[in-house]
Length: 70
Image 1: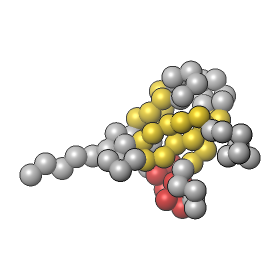
Image 2: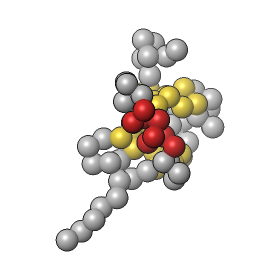
Image 3: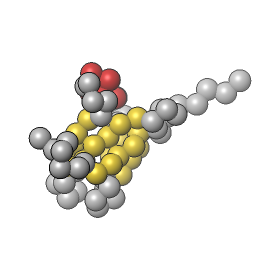
């Protein structure tokens, strides 16, 4: 039997700066939000993007559409 842990590392969709969720703060924010994702500002470029977790437990970063920015 194998136990797999999800990938908690992800990249900014704009500048590809590396980020990670080592302390699981982003995971807690995703679970607490009704929309199911967290909004972050990139340390590298300053752009705002979204992060969520997929069905395998891997962190996924994506660009936000204008309707979600707020």
